[in-house]
Amino acid sequence: MATLLDGAALAGEIKAQVAAEIKKAGINPGLAVVIVGENPASRIYVDYKKKDCAECGIRSEEFALSAEAGEDALLACIAALNRRADIHGILVQQPLPAGYDERKVLQAISPDKDVDAFHPVNVGRIVSGDYAFLPCTPAGVLALLDHYGINPKGRHCVVVGRSDIVGKPQAMLLLHRDATVTICHSKTLDLGHFTRQADILVAAVGKENLITADMVKPGAVVIDVAMNKNAAGKLCGDVDFPAVEPIASYITPVPGGVGPMTRAILMRNTLEATQNAASVL
Ligand code: GUN
Image 1 (cartoon, helix red, strand yellow):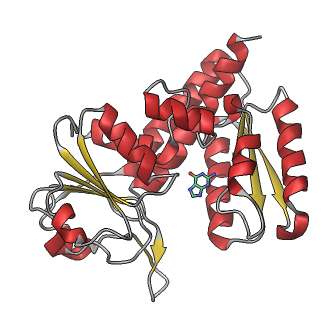
Image 2 (cartoon, helix red, strand yellow; image 1 turned 120 degrees about the horizontal axis):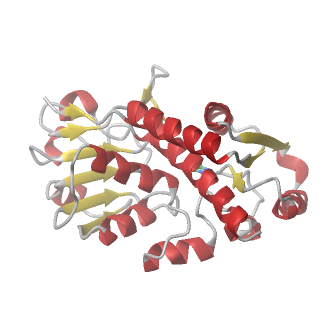
Image 3 (cartoon, rainbow, N blue to C red; image 1 turned 120 degrees about the vertical axis):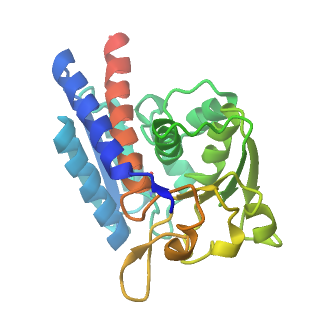
């Protein structure tokens, strides 16, 4: 039986540390959460992020735009937030509705307030290893590995998924930790050939039961980043958990694994953005 990587518990510890640091420093961090349109999953994520802020002593302000508001209105909203000294972090929940140029929107956020680390300047810093902000989900995965004493150095890490939000930055962070990294994606031929070689397998695709037991090396560490809903409406990841759990050494549950870690790193990034702003005053 695998050991469960308890992201909910570790996220609680990280948030408590962030809350204690904010209190001790007597600072007043502010996070702007921008949501466009009516995506139900985005609404849930945004509500969770606001709740995390409240727990940590971070002011959150929500800016909800209708899908029809248009890109110019969104860019104007971001420009105003960039100028506000009492807002230290800005996040625009993804995905944006059709008709919005996601790249253009992300580039409009001041890199100093880009607590998601999606701006090209911050992406470049992730590639070079000179981080300003750590990307939330990949950094959350590393924090989880560290907490359980799992060192990726020299290990074969296989990342399934090449999104800008998870797959690509996850591969980079693991590379910076001296892992040997393989990135697989929807066009990979014979996915199992690669996943079976993984000492650490990170699944970040968004497809229920993509990773079955025959695709996992016995004793592997299995990290499931995905958040899907199955036919019964229950949350599940990409990994066939009941079949894979008996052969893995460590595995993340869904929910309660990577998700809470992503949000905990967002809180830490917002604290850092506030400290950075104070240091340049
Ligand atoms: N959509 C899915 N994950 C994320 C995330 O980490 N940040 C933002 N802004 N949108 C997302």
